[in-house]
Length: 358
Image (tube, rainbow, N blue to C red; front, side, top):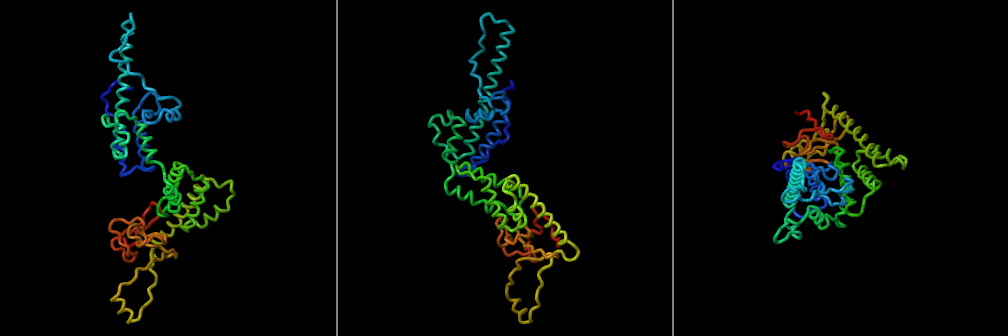
């Protein structure tokens, strides 16, 4: 440890993410993740020296399981150095050095413990910690592991309704306009929550439910067929991800190619043909509001649908009227022929391409 006790603690997260309202399993997961990172960011030679002050946050058993040895701070050396009778000048000097180093180490550990405890109390509404608060001493005699255990056992357990909703969320775990990596991240969190609730979702179950979701979106028709006929021994989660990652790259490649034609000189986006109307119909149209066309057709025949917030894409379920992630000022009746000041780009995974009108 450093011999200076005046060093300001520099945490990875100066403040823990505030938990709004009652803590949940998900919000507590983030709180612990940030807390662990902060504890590990302050070096210590104790407990193997590889995990900083994580031993102040974890229970003794949990830390031992991670580090392979206990995180044991030294005992306080007392009010002054103790020298044996007849100690030499060199021995006295060494005793003083050890005494000062021990005090410095304990001061840093105390500062880390107090700061991390204060971060928890600040991030969590006091109402949900009051059970541990002493009327006189507050949280002074409460350890960090005690605070975490209280929060987890009181608010981190998942209800039957939450577990069922978590499982059902696989059916909506991915929007085809988002990177497929977001899907794998969402599935991992869904499995974590299921495990935390005592009803783990196996990889086979997750693959089956995700496969059904893919079939529903209609973007991986051939890929789903190819996956279904694979030998059972090859149907692992790792292969599942690889298979659909590759198919998604091919989907994006084809979409990009179609958009290249869309931007070509021979009319990139061609509105559906308008049938000439009789004079009487023209007069009637002038006094009535026309219904926006649901889609446009690219020069290669691909149907594309417009969303005021996100632009033009191939998902028939994503239009201005059906958008699930509307920006401020979103116009439900906006179409590609009447954008009403909306997004003038083409959706393609992470990329967005400008429409030829721009």
